[in-house]
Length: 98
Image (cartoon, rainbow, N blue to C red; front, side, top):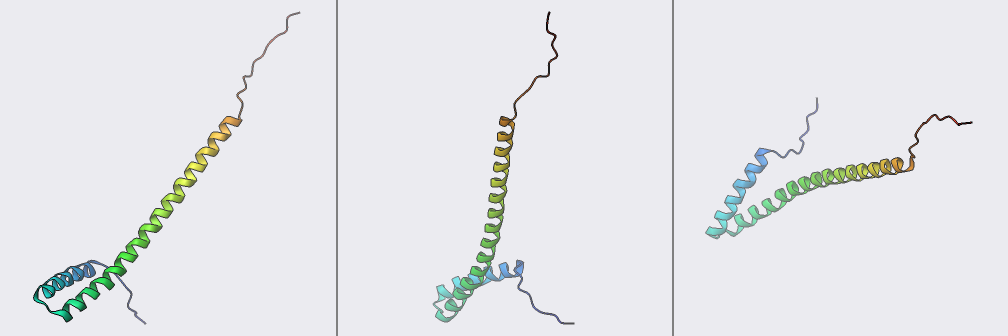
């Protein structure tokens, strides 16, 4: 059985970003350049990956909603055109007087 590691973003990743952010603030305050540099790039890379994945998900949802709305509006306009093209007829029986 082969087990492979998958990329997962969960509470642990969010928690580590919060901790690294406080480490970044503390090291910047103390003047530790190396730790500030490492923590800043960790925040940029991991935060960027999370922001990119969330952005892609939001774009897919927005695009799907837009396609749904366009389809609903086209269906509605087709339905209105169909109703306008139908003429109303009244079925009446009549007698001709002699």
